[in-house]
Image (cartoon, rainbow, N blue to C red; front, side, top):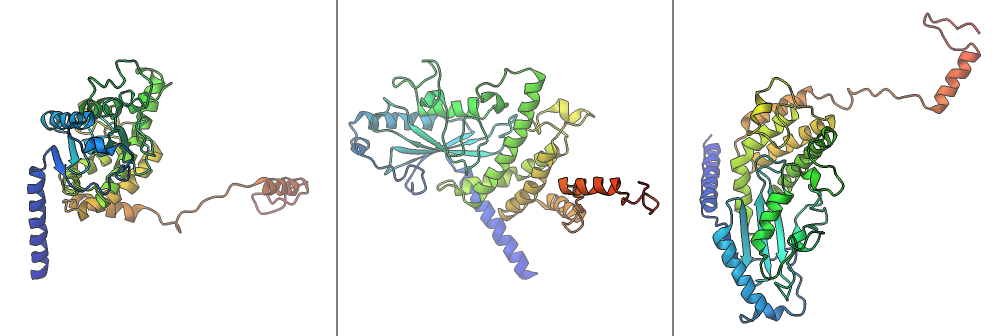
Length: 351
């Protein structure tokens, strides 16, 4: 008992220390370790411009730092590097009312040597998952402001006016939005029933991928954000798990947990696909385990996992009835024609 109490006390102390670090986790800060940045090895010719303080690129990046330090919203955090001012990392917290809620989405920036003539390169840390039409599994970010997608002149990068802050706000508001299905070119406009149903189905897929992203982040958070990631999910574990249950049980539409009063108070359940239910059942158990390892209190949620394990039939119990193939059907017909097929009473049928 003494050992258990000591371990519990030590863990609580560690959590309190981490929480203090998070409380002092500035939205903008300068750090030194860029070793896991996607563009870390991108050391092409012309990098002297980032060292020379008088260069246009250096001056513009310093202006960007000041803008970010003063104007970042509560849901975006940025780290820049003292030895590589051409690099930047940002994380966006998924907004309520979207299938991205409570998730963390990391982006690595790299400024070109002729910045701001050209926009920065931006890489989304996708973990091989595509959870948005604008964010590819290979990390590509399609956005008019980055000149990686079509758009009007006013929507594209303007060297005299465009900023990193505008890029981040565009990703947050235009990309990680309430109905990302309609970001895809060719999809119909909002309002039509058939398209809205497809949008809801897409939101199911998005939430599943967002939960998978959470698991990847908890296993190996990006450098300089380790404590932030851990405590973000420590604080939001209960809400995320309750949302998983609500969506899976059809209590509320995916993305609207905690804010969709009309759905949550209605006696009608929300239609949910079997595919989504199956995916959430597996992810729910994984999330409970991951949150528990990070120090979150998930006792009530563990009980549901245990109950579901008991009620889920094992592979040995599941009997799959095999459908007859072509050969079996032919044999069946021949037996019937030749009078070899037995009738229901056990005798042979009459030819």
